[in-house]
Image 1 (cartoon, rainbow, N blue to C red):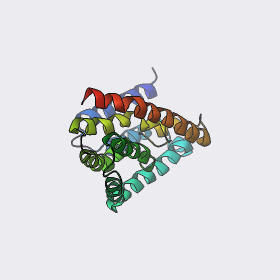
Image 2 (image 1 turned 180 degrees about the horizontal axis):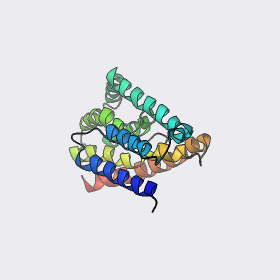
Image 3 (image 1 turned 90 degrees about the vertical axis):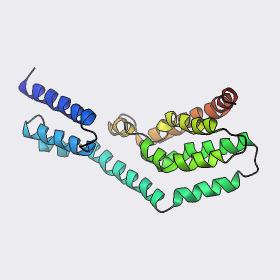
Image 4 (image 1 turned 135 degrees about the vertical axis):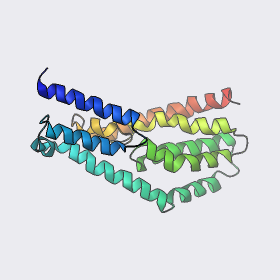
Length: 206
């Protein structure tokens, strides 16, 4: 191994240790910036290389913007407004139909959020409360029916989860194709869950 490769390996290990061990004391972003700074100081990479990596800057700018916008939707009360509207709409409906509406909106509203963490933080407590208000729906069914969709919605957009922008930013898939395939697979996963997963969940937890 060359000196640069050894330096890079040490810096990666150090960053991982700080992310895992010191996560309660040092912000993850601070660790990342520290690691990049070390890479520049030890000449593992150059500032020119950093500046010319356009795809990374592209992802950084629009992903940060979307995260901020998602937080703004929550702060201005838009999310609570939607939840209140849903609660009034499903009142009096069959429990399964009502739960299906809640789960469907929880799933497709992920288009407004740039990560699963932001989605869960903003929507899960409110939608869980709404689902718990449906007569005949137990707390377990309400919680699990929403939680299981989080493993499916990560395909619907180029910013759906943290790792997705990295794949999108690599440039192997065109933007139009990413959106189209995201919608297609999102519909497939959604239809499968609604038609099979949700009824089965209600059956085994009844």
